[in-house]
Length: 441
Image (tube, rainbow, N blue to C red; front, side, top):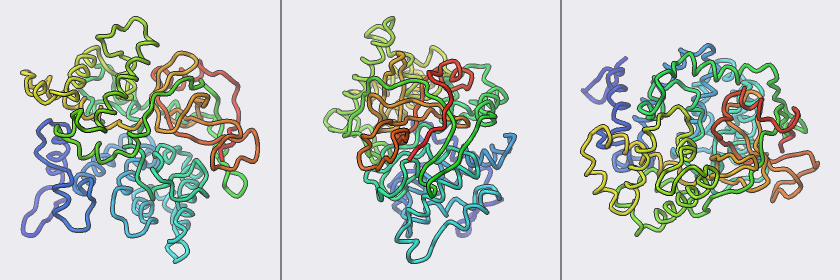
């Protein structure tokens, strides 16, 4: 396969390798940023179509390594594809889901095709397509992938159930809790290949995922005209304390476009980020009393990376990253004489910026976690059979603008990661209550 541009051409495989190798370099030679994208009229302002395309093609090739290619196209790649289409200047809101439908397996394509409505009414009431898209993916594909997508800064329509994706508004955060902990680090997924344990082979990683996604208790259905999501699972823990900052939610420009010039306390958003991380560090040290004030708690780092497959070296790497995002950070970064240390510090610095807007929390059982925005004390952390994330549900009648008809109904708040609870066997050991069918409106 070749890529053509005027009279020039390049082998597609070589080009994909060239682009992706540049992604995690501190001095990338391919610039997938607004300055480049802006040269092409009517193209996305926040990312490069070429970069997205290269990453997508590479990811789909990796899908052949899994036992069920069609399932993993949904499970691993749908969230990323949906997030990227959200950032494009789509003519119609319906385009944001229809644009990726053709990349799914044939079974799901057949289920999705009839529900994408391009009629005049369908385009104006596009949330109905979002509802049906979420429904078909959950029920037909038995995948919780749509729940991974973060909500919108301003929800476009309150008629949507809490478990439905809404791609019409600006995202609350970048996509982060996307199952990377169950993808082998031999692929360098998410740029953390330097941190992993040596024994994390692709077969071992796939076995962890398979124990969750092939569980015999998976049950996903709907009720009340598809407004209620019914799924089997159990409660693992309860959120006791949350560290968040509303000012950091929706700051995608800061995450995408930020440079060394923005990573200074003269920038109020960046100053708020530093204050936020200081608060999270204090919370993590309270949970880990053996950690000194001069150390960055390992649980804090694991939550930021959302991956426990790291060595002790990661603490030094994130200490460097912390210095990099404080005042004088650029000079500190340039002063790192070892090229390998500088590269790792750059990867960690990018991650600190990328996760801006997420919430950290402590549970009643003394665990530290990270979640998409919106959780609060009293919310329940749950396991859904078949779901690789943990899921935050809110109980009771105080549900804001969402009409709750029954006391046993919950509202879906978001997804979460807690170290030590991301494997099925660990979740089974940590359960607080018996299995139940969650009714999520």
